[in-house]
Length: 350
Ligand code: NAD
Image (cartoon, rainbow, N blue to C red):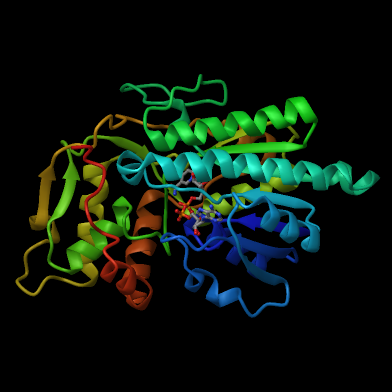
């Protein structure tokens, strides 16, 4: 099958591209603008494959999208390209509206034109798979889980833009009959995660001897999903998911942010102890919380488990160990990004 991946130079998109080339016989076209968050070094390992192509393009540019889809002729479009960092969405929501809403509209419009012109079997088999977040559901209290029926209640410009894009995708399914699928997943972590996000940020700042900023009390809860588990879920959904259906994807790994930071420090203490013998946890510093910071996210992933047989393979303990080891072994990937000030505090809305 030919799979058109948007955002395939970013964190999750590149993991999907690497997985599809390494473990399947699918052909992949990676369509990515290469914003600050996208680097081709994330797909270097598979770039030599004759089943892989790259096109640099903007999803908001309908001509570019039309040309790329028209020449590749995909059976599946997996749409991951987005502005993805909540803190950046607080400082500059415009880019989130542009890429996540207008860009998704452009993708849907071009996919629909292409799909309508397909004949019989190809038209029946075509899928448009939109990758979204659990943040569209808002914030949970101490108990409860997000299911696919939880009402949308986004709180940040990022999650609002993703919620809007989900609604557009759903509307294109209902109104035009485009065969759409949506997945809403929890916080991912793993290799090639841009060092502005919590886990890689803590690793790179710890190694630099800098403070480890924890927002508020650090008691916000997220359900952590290892990125390689996520991309297996995406494959299950676009290959076998029911048209028009939404699937929540989660790791069954609820952790407070503070626990996550302590786990990172413990692995660094073991693998690269500080010269003075102290724990990296000594660098922890509590800072002003993110405005509107959601308290708790947790996913009920029973639908994708029961209907498609997907389950995460990694526990948080095994996944975080692999992640810290990966960052220690791949400094050449993240050091230039850190030098470009990826790891600065953003989103204080002051
Ligand atoms: P990322 O920021 O690491 O990567 C985004 C990629 O999209 C980059 O390669 C960037 O160059 C590209 N891109 C951005 N704007 C573009 C445009 N206008 N045209 C073409 N390409 C463009 O993001 P990620 O963490 O890999 O997230 C991928 C998707 O998964 C996003 O849609 C995000 O909302 C969703 N998601 C992420 C998480 C997570 O924990 N990271 C959780 C749930 C859902």
